Image 1 (cartoon, rainbow, N blue to C red):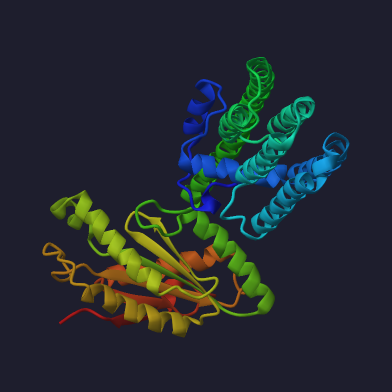
Image 2: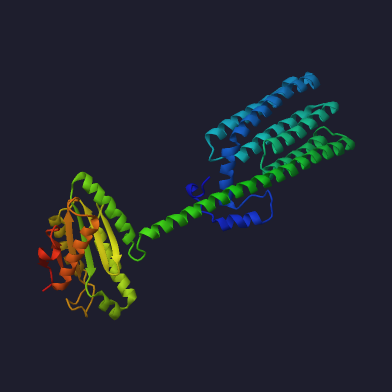
Length: 420
């Protein structure tokens, strides 16, 4: 039972709790919740409905013996009414089976009960005075069977009761001309039995609705806890400003990709990217503009890491890091060269920058086939050192650490991508 799956607006646990804290009644819920309740009832009650209806139809058919004993002289007409109504009920149940979306399970019980009740009234209209009491008892049994055993919803049960009582009195008064005493006795017995059955039905349905709400409350609380856990898990690995992976997630992915590349003997590249003169940008344009600037740069970085295993993370402040499994240092360098140019082409105004009048970035690239380093963090250190040299050589450029086995300062290649 999942409200979201059914296309309904999800209920929060507080909404369900308010319903539980309110009066415990058998009244229908508001439309969307009532629909969910009826679906739950159909799922849980269908086996009981099938067996109950079959039992009821068998007993209803056996009452044909009473017809033969009491009304043998007109048994043809009586059986036509009884078994004709039986065929109508069976036909309706067949339609219900193939059109579940048209008829709810409660409506199926209501219509089946009403058809049999109308047939009993039709037979009673033909019955002699002594036999009418027997058919009154069959009507009482039908009420008890339908309202209590089959659990016909209270509002449908009440509707059946009103229709049957009115029709019963119409038959007694206008059709057979029963004496006043018989009419009074029939009404007392019929309405008394109906009242007991209705009260029981209302109480049982109230309990079922409360049980449904308790189950729904437990499910919603569980779903909300899972949502909170998912959010907390996401926040623990995601930078809230840029939506990129955070440093913790980066370190986890770096370890995983290092081991994978080690097994497959393929290269692994790490690229460090830093926004040039970002403190000046923040001081000049404000922190909100600074956040927007970082978000735009993060979007561009994300476009450079779309393959499985690629990772773009915010390393801290205005510094970002990219992990590229399977990329050689030359391949990573060429892509970062494009990225440095792409960021400057965004034309994010930065008139106090010592580099140029737009926001620029510097980048450091390092790559290796795992096994030649002590750990993946040596690779990060080399990329960071290459970034350090990019900063000190004028910014707005990319530097690659070419020979990772020797100190990065000893062998670097520089590409100046500064705008004219």
